[in-house]
Amino acid sequence: PAEADAVEGSISAITGIDPGAGIMAATEEAIEVYDLNVGLLESSDAAMTAELDAAIANEEWIIVTGWSPHWKFAAFDLKYLKDPEEVYGGEEYIATIARQGLEEDHPAVFELLQNFSWTDDEIGEVMDMNTQNSDFVANADQWIADNSDLVDSWTPEGLEGNGETIDILLVEWDCALASTNVIAAILRDAGFEVNMTPVDGGVMWSSIAEGDADFMTTAWLPGTHASYIDQFGDDVVEVATNYEGARIGLVVPSYVPFDSITDIND
Ligand code: PBE
Image (cartoon, rainbow, N blue to C red):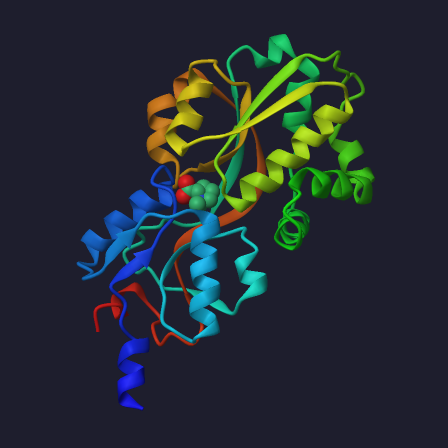
């Protein structure tokens, strides 16, 4: 019926995430570049995916800020909208970024970070476990036990702590929760005391640049965190790429009849 369709088809705002995420700045730009007559709501990864879940249950139209790797693509039938102006950039990599001096202070920890790199399936398993059970620490321990060959290949011989504290920062994006908890569990098993502190994206970068924290595993380059690497790149150490083939964009359930960002105003 036409009336129901009209309700289903009304989108007044894109459902976004935390304001420090690069994808929020990219989406503000997309609204300008495509002259979209929609707003952008701040939220979080967890709240955005809850909204997505609820919209899909009612077959309502919704547009979210989306990215891969993310478990939502396994859980729901979704599609990226085409981005002919390339506001969201192309394929990206996820980097591990450390403070200056970490290599000298904890060479084996630094070596672990140099070795840490995983595939879509591997991070996907951890994200999937985290959606089933919110005990991320237990999930990381379980995943490590199930993937000991891979974890051994990352772990240098000399990785041995004596209760020294390692401070890891993250933003509560599901991919970052997965990578951070796995690396933290490896360090704890090796005898370090690990703090994991969730912060805003800008604080994550500035704190590592200032040497107030040791590292993070969730720098999206070259595009999504371009403004952060421009601002802080000289004061941090890019240790390694931990994931290749990342992507950001606008995402809708597959039943939404848009193929491109240019269809949103129609
Ligand atoms: N994300 C996930 C982040 C990086 C990781 C795409 C939401 C962002 O800064 O936009």
